[in-house]
Image (tube, rainbow over all chains, first blue to last red; front, top):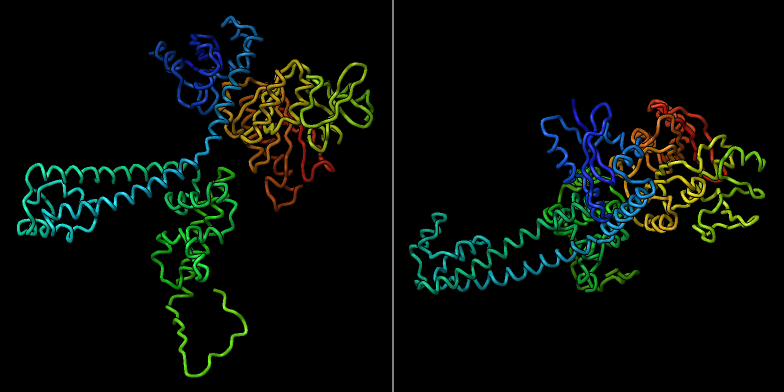
Length: 363
Length: 224
């Protein structure tokens, strides 16, 4: 005989298959607490307590589908109220309070403009990058007093920071590194000098770890607030675009042409021709493409981003896959129809007068 | 339709001149800018068929509307509470569970629910009835006005959880929301077929022209 457990605003109740009330566990009579309990999809403490007391028997909770207990609670409410010693009026009063509390919680969640968090986190990430680079340069100079060869051998700042925490003879690295360490022309460091630079290097390493944490945070945040944009352009670029636009809503309102050059403000105002791409240039799809493809890809990419942002700002649909496929098709088509590098035109001045232009070239 | 006839058919719905109205549960307060009319000391709220699909259906020949003063109603897609407020007038001693998904619009609904003690606000997605199963109970009547391509599925899912045996339900089918390109008549036929297969018995179909385009209000009974 299985036992069924379901809940309503009063608490959790368990019934057997025949509909008999077996046990109950009331919620505290506080609307806000009850709202908190009902808001999450996990089991409430009361349901778990009930289940524990009834251990030894098969328990079926009501989660994704109605069960007998829930059906009874919903269709024989008056009987349950009688068992609980509560009048209809009292129940309805409680129900109202709980529903309003739940409504407030729900509204607050939506009102928490999560894209603000993404924008700050992105700015923080940029700050961390700047600082890390600054400190990395300093670390290199400092540690190079002891082991100058390392700086040329290790390009990555992050790895360098890790290695610079040890004396050169203790470094376990590639053959080249160990060989250079043995033959180094740098000075030997006394213990406290080594400790000083090692401490600095450690802090720098921690900064890189902080960078990782920020990236993860941004990724998960973006997955929540703008899943399509995140899947299409990557969470970091997506967050950058939102930051440049000011908010997800703003980004959603922008025409693709503007999205294409977000982040290229400087280039715009210099007397250059309108730039082909701004922040989106950083995306591997554009960065690694041949130069005569970039503008075309940037245009298509920006268009898809615009769609993704609009979907994210307004609904909960999933269009990222279709958008990505459309984009990939375009890139493939470009590879076919524009496979060879076009000749760059060079205008050669001659002794003759330059022909007068009838129209002014747009700069 | 004659006033007397209407009063007989639809409990709580009154005919004033050529319009319909409901008795104001909270006299003196308007919900959406409707007109208030006082007759012999009783205040009525004029029910605008252009704003409310249920009113449009009544004016277009709805034969039965099983709402009573003690009815428990589940309203899916309550929006800002326009139609819900009239249902609240009719089911003055009952309870109306108002489910709405959009937070912006829900804010307005919340204000309406605060005014009327028989309206319970629920901010939830009607596609997930189990999320509010702990709040609501089985209802005598479900009214659905949701513009989604899977409207009919949502209708059925909610009926499974929340309709009383032999309970009644109405859904405003918006052809364009299901398929913006196909012919409305075909869409309606398909959805009606689906409804029957889910366990509904279709009692009446009411097209809502001229108040709404390509909308069909279907009155059905739940057979389970």
